[in-house]
Length: 531
Image (cartoon, rainbow, N blue to C red; front, side, top):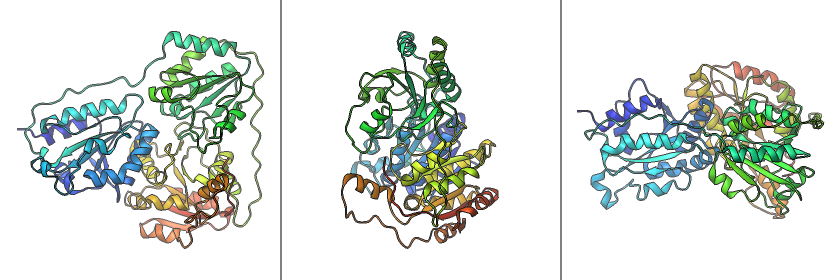
């Protein structure tokens, strides 16, 4: 007779969930024992890295991914990654071990006492099956929940003695629609507002990249002849940044953002929240007299927007439909975004000088993974992203995502056969949060290049301290970190790029390597302005 484990593995095959990210624990071994030859287990040395690797893999492959965590302590370790996956809208199927049903009443060691509550509110659904026989059907429901918009992580808590129980049958394999079109009446209202606008502006976000919406966004922008801005702190890029109508990146504070939009009477936000604000700098949410129109596939995102009229629908389908309803505008197009000045490289170079050299050596098809908070503005000024699926960052604001996400993305590129080069730009402070992910990259021989910006400090926190007028904050300096030595200890190639002129050759060599390369790059210790 087939067991619960047999049926579950068959369902995982049918759902194409055959790559499993995790760090095995005792409560997971009954599931993982005699691991099938047609499955791949990607070992991370810590659960936070496992979740972030899976996040990167899911985003790059554009399909859900299975993460297997160890009961309550493992879920706890992975929570930072789950918070990021929630905000990134990444469809992860998280299974966590649970103690034996025979002992749950007395709460033995490694019991997840409130397993379905532990990951809340950062999963779309959490469930511990009442019967062992319910596991396959629960997995089908978890999959269906994760892939429907807004996509996101789900969690199943699974007692370790359930796997050997006889199965009660095979759950129906179901397919689901994962996109929904805009309401026609609401769409017409939006189109009428845009057609009557004297000076509209388009603000794009990660939802357009997740849904393949670049061509639709470009067509809409060109029909409107409107300037295009990136939503603040966007986790993905929703519009080609060298397009003549692209203007740059909105600041992530209330007053400065509204000031940047001054002069526009209609603001169309597509595929982004309204807005990601931090720090608090008060002011009006919008310029006086401006109307905001919001397109999102996330009802919660629409509900919490402080201003504007929302349309809950697929961003790409909505852009396409709007373009079909709008006449071609006859207003002059916006002036082109000014060329960014390229400063002379000092010793050590400023972030702008470093990123200018990086941009000159950037492969056209490369993927950028970013977690360098204090240098982000310089990076986005100097290096323009012009291909979909080429920029990934954490939407949550937490650290520890970028390094393991780059590993997952590089693995997805290899598994898909696309083999696009992957370059991660990581601050030396961020690097320490999930440094053990380097081991996985080395074991899998992934040719990802990690550019580690070394300024020996949490410069972003110093910038916040300056803005908030809180001098004397302890713990903001990071002396004594030997980045290349750490990287070599995990099996990576490593070097220090002391002269910025040597960066192009070092980057090219890293991308040709048969494994990961960590390049430590000293940069200026000057604390940048936060906004």
